[in-house]
Length: 278
Length: 278
Image 1 (cartoon, chains in turn blue, yellow):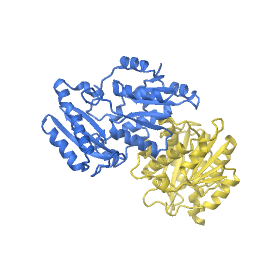
Image 2 (cartoon, rainbow over the protein chains, first blue to last red):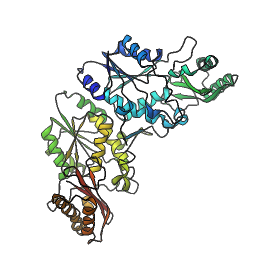
Image 3 (cartoon, helix red, strand yellow):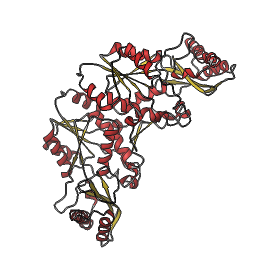
Image 4 (tube, rainbow over the protein chains, first blue to last red):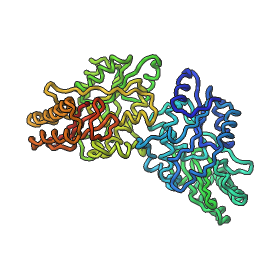
């Protein structure tokens, strides 16, 4: 595995790879868990070369969010990448990735400012800005993203479409702990009691999915049942529960195999999101 | 010459060209004049394939500007392109180039909102949005832009840098009428008297360049002399006269061979810009 932190070096390396080879790209913020590893493993299977980036992108954190405390595990991450057969590990720093007074990417006015975008205004602007930069540096055939950040995935698909990027976006299944908690680098913030409480997030989604399986397709009713279930746990503060189609439009009637049930909660100061594709 | 209006058809055509061939791209808004033809001719000399686009991009016109009356000469333009040996003429329409609720490009907060950006706020956002789309569709080796729109050129260079685009931007000399008026599709708006008056724009720039040649490097003095000269013509309303370096930073002392003297005026309702690189 080649570890690089210079943009031009990575670009030069990758531009020498012949066009018949498939290049995979897995952008991450590090603190790699099994969710990331599943992306890398899928990337490895489907491509000739795998590039992983680790960059805690400051512009996608809001003032007061956890930029400074976001878990950093550089050595463990590098070891994991090596074990997974990653070819290039790209570790740029902030000074390399950003200049003063840059041209900016802005999330779409509607789709970018609902749900996560409403709770974290500006987050998607920064995410799209860095993803476009990384895409253009790596110029991959396939780029891998988890379904857990469903709205992020939807906006990245939109960016590829709006700007005619020659990149195939591969949406990967959510990886969960044995007890159902969706993997997240932020799970380390949970204490034992909070960790226990957090299980009810995926439980509520599973109940909802079961209801959909039994042909209940009224979004309002499904959402109400999830809210009722979670209301037992007063320490879980629901930020939103909503149901969207694959184009990320909120829908009143669930379209089977074309819908996503989304949830965001806070337990203490820890924000957790999860979803299920039904 | 192949005339195309579908994005996917053009993309498919161009992606079949082998990588050893150089592709040139000349984006225009049509109403082609000798300025455009000089770009195309340079593109033709320096590349294997020349792609010209004609698209009057609505998002770079402000409310109340001349979007509806902007000169259209589709057939003459096509004929000229053919005579110049253009390989692909791309004529998309608005519905193809834009979708609802798009991801947006925004000009840099400082550099995008001075001079032209101050007079035409939002203009550069729309310009960058369409140029990025077109760049990604065509994926050229070299893209050709005139020095007349110096701030546009500077921002396009910045976009290539900020987003690591693999495109070489070629800055081309301003082409002038025999009497010195810089070529512009908007010159057709000038009546005979206005056309006569407009000559003083390039005259004022020539005086300034001569002064710089005689080692006068104080920006304030040079600008003052231009203003004094133009003040004879009360029908010429100066919007700005300024001097910047190649990074488009306003400078108090002219850096020889690294400076641009810029002017924007209004004659009646017609806005004209010009500049000289010294």
